Image (cartoon, rainbow, N blue to C red; front, side):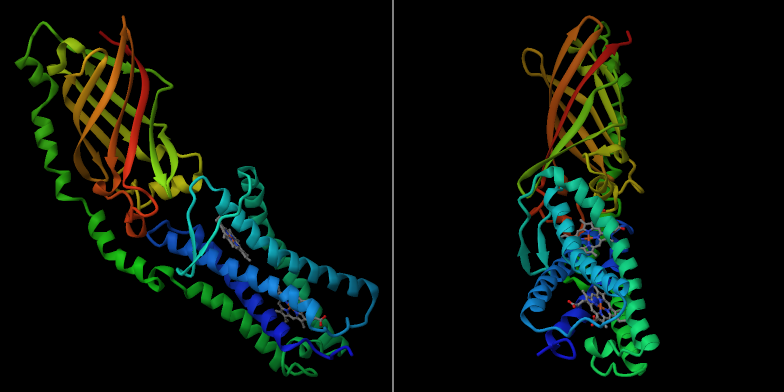
Length: 416
Ligand code: HEM
Ligand code: HEM
C-alpha cells in the first residue's frame, strides 16, 4: 500500500540535508575571507560538512528505494514533470557538489589531508590531475543552480499547500496539515538554523588546537629581537670598507642579473615536493674570484611574487601565517664572506632576513665566467620554522616539513 506521507527516516534526512546545505553554501563564503590562522580550520569544517552531506545523501537515496514513498501528487503534466526535474536536480547536486569538492582537494598540487571534524581521516580520490579544473568550475557553479532549484521547490510546495489545497507539507513535515502556518514556520526555522549557524560558527574558536596556537602565533609574528641586531653588524661590513682593507688591485666586478633567472624553493607537504619560485627579485652583486674579500652579494626578494602554480596556495603563502607580506614585504640575503671551494665552486656565508627574523644561511654555488658573461647556480637549505614561516596549525612539521631547499640559476653581465 502506498503511504500518505514520507517515512520518518526520509523526513529526518530531508531536513538534515536541507539545513546542512544551507549551512554549507553560506559558510563557503568564509573560504574567500581573510587568510588568517583559521583558514585551515575553515577548510577542514567545509570539507567535513560536505562529506557528511554526501554520506547522508547516499543514505537518503538508498532509503528512497527501500522505504515506500507516497504517490506523486496528481496535477497538470508540466507541474509533475517540473517537480520530478527539481527533485532529480536536487539529488544530482547533493552528490555532485561534495564529489567535485573532493576531486578539487584530491587533485590539488598541495595535498592537504582531510580529517573529518578533526577525528576521521578521509582519503583522496585516485583521479587524474586534469579533473581538477572542471571540478572546480562545477563546484563553484552548482550551488547557484541549487539555489534556483530551491526557489522552484519551495514555490511548488507553497502552491500546493495554499493555492491548490493539497497539504503537501504534511507529507514531509509532522503537523503540516491544512493551511496551518506552523509547518511552514518549522520549515523556515530549520533552514534559518543552517544559515545562522553558518554565520556564527568560528572554527578558530571551536577548534582547540587552532585556539591554542593563536597565542604563540601572535607572539611569533611580532618582529623578533633578532631582526634588528644583525643589521648593524652587516652595515659594519660594508663592501667599500672591506675592499679598502684588502688588496687594492683586485676589485670585484659589478654584475647585472639578466632576465629569465630563477630563484626557487622546494618544500615538502605530506612528503610530496612542492615547488615554487619568486618572479620579482633584485640582486646587487660585486664579485670576483680574485677579490673574494671585497665581494658582496645582496639579494632582495618581493615575497608577494611567490608562484607555486596555484593562486589559492600563493594567497596562503603571502598571508599572515606564512610570509605575512602585509608586514614583511621583502626577504633579503646579504653575504660579505666567501670561500673558494675548488674549481668553479664557492661558498657564501650570509644572512637571510625573512619575516623579520635574521639568521645565518650558508650558500653553495658554482660560477662560470666567460668574459663579461657569467652564470651562477646554487642552493641552500633553511628551516622555515626558525623564521616563523608557518604559524598556528602550520607551525607543525607533520604536514609541511621544516627544511626548505632554496635554489637559483641565473645569468649576469659584468658592468665593469
Ligand atoms: C536545499 C534544501 C532542500 C533540498 C535539497 C530538498 C530536497 C528534496 C527532495 C530531493 C525531495 C524529493 C523526495 C523524494 O521523493 O525522494 C523533496 C521533497 C519535498 N520537499 Fe524538499 N528540499 C529542500 C528544502 C525544502 C523546503 C525549504 C521545503 C518547504 C517549504 C521542502 C518541502 C518539501 C516537500 C513538501 C517535499 C515532498 C514533495 C512531495 O511529496 O512530492 N523542501 N525535497
Ligand atoms: C554539498 C556540499 C558542498 C557545497 C554546497 C559546497 C559549496 C562550495 C562553494 C559555494 C564554494 C565556493 C566558495 C568561494 O570560493 O566563494 C566552495 C569551495 C570549495 N569547496 Fe566546497 N562545497 C561542498 C562540499 C565540499 C567538499 C566535500 C569538499 C572537499 C572534500 C569541498 C572543497 C572545497 C574547496 C577546496 C573549495 C575551494 C575551491 C577553490 O576556490 O578553488 N567542498 N564549496
